[in-house]
Length: 128
Image 1: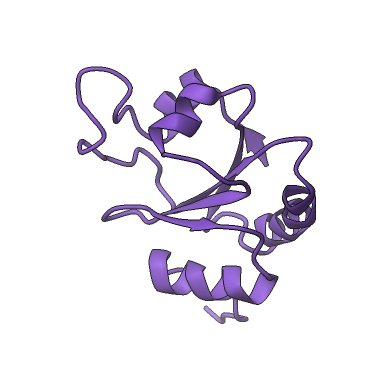
Image 2: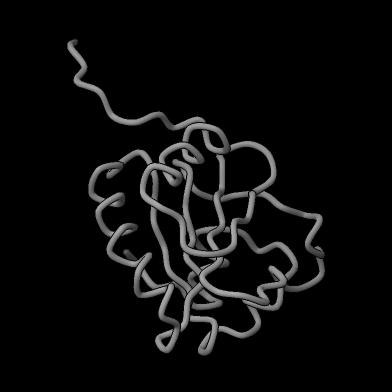
């Protein structure tokens, strides 16, 4: 899972709200949906979520990009998204507005949200 800074966020995710455009100018730059984990090193629940997201990043490799943002280091990004509690997880579909979830979620809830919010279903064996 890649850690994002302000510069890499603008490059890979969106330049929205980081200059003249305002937060309403959301236009995701990625070619697959993304999940961003807003966390801090001192946060206990964040430490519980991290290995779950690591597992999911392997299971959904190539279909969802997974990123992390340290709210202590990247306060501008945290404030742009109104992060008041952590962990906060941002689910970014290819089309439409992203959705935010607060708190540590179990793995099956992440999978449900991947399908519901981002249209990415759990991997099944495919033939073809």
